[in-house]
Amino acid sequence: MSYDMVIVGAGIQGVGVAQAAVAAGYSVLVLEQKAVAAATSSQSSKLIHGGLRYLESAQFSLVRESLQERALLLELAPELVRRVAMHIPVYGNTTRSPRLIATGLWLYRLLSGFDEDSEFSRLHRSEWDALDGLQTRDLRAVYRYTEAQTDDAALTRAVLRSAQSLGAELQMPAELVGAEHHAKGVRVTYRGEAREETVEARVLVNCAGPWATEVIERVTPAMKPPEVELVQGSHLLLPQSLNHHFYLESPSDRRAIFALPWEGRLLVGTTETVHQGAPEEARCLDSERDYLLGALTHYFPRMTIPRDQIESFAGLRVLPKAEDSAFGRSREVLFHANNEQAPRVLSIMGGKLTTYRATAQDVLKRLRPSLPARRAVADTAKLPLTP
Ligand SMILES: Cc1cc2nc3c(=O)[nH]c(=O)nc-3n(C[C@H](O)[C@H](O)[C@H](O)COP(=O)(O)OP(=O)(O)OC[C@H]3O[C@@H](n4cnc5c(N)ncnc54)[C@H](O)[C@@H]3O)c2cc1C
Image 1: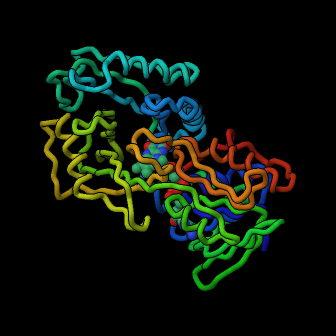
Image 2: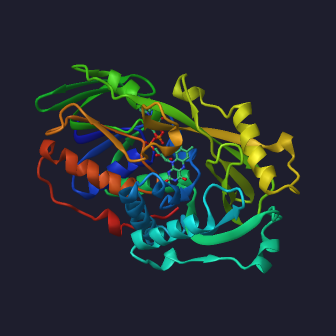
Image 3: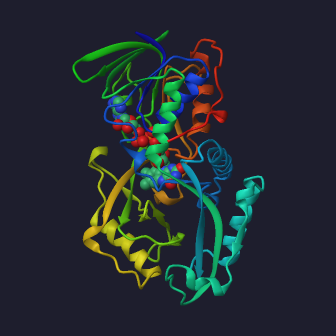
C-alpha cells in the first residue's frame, strides 16, 4: 500500500494533521499503538484558552493564535467546547497586582481583536461571599473573564471522525517500529495485532507526543533527535466540586494553578516535575499531590477533602531542554525535520490542544515541497465537530 502521508500517533496533533491533510486532498494513514487520545491528549487541564499567563513570557503570537482558535472552536464544536467564567483572586501578597492582572486582561482583549468573549470585570466586594468559600482575608480584588473548557479526549475523537469522514484511515493497535527515508519517500514498518506490515509514504509525520524521540531513533538513515525534556504535569480529581472556575497563584512557588469544576468533580492542576523514566511510567507523585492540595486548602480553608477518594493523572509536556524552570519556557510547537527544505520525516512536539488546527496548517505548509499537487476537498475552519 502507499499513502501521501503516514502519521504516527492519534493524539490531538496526529488527528489534527490527518484532518488537515485529507481536507487538502491527500491520502492519509494514522498509526496508533494504544488508543485514540491515550496519552497527553486525555491528560491536559482541558482548557481551550488563550493562555493568559503566556503574556508574562511575551509569547504574544501564541496567545493571539490561541484566542483565534478558541473563537473558532466555540463555533465549530459547540457541544464539545463551552465557555466558562474564570475567576482570578488577588491578595495583598499575590505577586501579580490587581493593576497587572487588569493590564493582562486588556492585552488579552486586544489580542483577541476585542471579540465578544474578551470582556472582563472586577467583582464587587458584595459578590465575594458567593465564591465557594474563597479565602477573603487580605483579598484585594477578584477578576472574572471568559475561557473555554472541553473534554480533551472527546475533542480528539471528534477530529479523528472528521478526518475519517474525508477518507483518513486508522490502524490501531499499530506501533511504528521502523522508517527508512529515501529520495522519493519513506518506507514505514509497523507492528499490528498479528504481524508486521510495511507501507510506502511520501512523508512521515511523527506526532508521538512524549515518545517522539523514540520514534526519531527508529528512523534510518539516522537523524539527530532534538534536545527536549519531558516535564510532568499532574492533576487531581476531587469527588466534590465548586460552583466557579478559579485561576490561582500557588502560595509556595507562585506558579499558576487551576481549580476547575469538571463533570461534577473538581479538577486541580497542575505541576512541573522533570520526568526521567519511560513516558508510560508517568504518575502523580505524593509531593505533587501535597503541593496541589496545599494550594487548594490555602484558598478554600473550609473545604473538607476526602483524601481517600482523590483520583489523579499525569501528562507529559515535551519542552525544549533548558536550565531554567519549565514554567516560563516556550509552549510553541517544536518542529524537527530530516531536511527543512523538503522534509520526508517531520516531527511535531509539544504545543497546545487549543491550537491543534493552526499547527496542522503549519505542518502542511512545511510538507508541501515533498507532496504532489492535490485538489482541496474541504476547509478545516469550516468543518463542524460533533461528539
Ligand atoms: C499537564 C498538561 C496540561 C495541559 N493543559 C492544556 C490545556 O488546558 N489546554 C491546551 O490547549 N493544551 C494543554 N496541554 C497541551 C496539550 O495537552 C498537548 O500539547 C497535546 O495533548 C499533545 O498532543 P500530541 O498529539 O502531541 O501527543 P499525545 O496526546 O501524547 O499523543 C501521542 C500518541 O502517539 C502514540 N504513539 C507513541 N509512539 C507511537 C508509536 N511508536 N507508534 C504508534 N503510536 C505511537 C501514543 O500512544 C499517543 O496516543 C497540556 C499539556 C500537559 C502535559
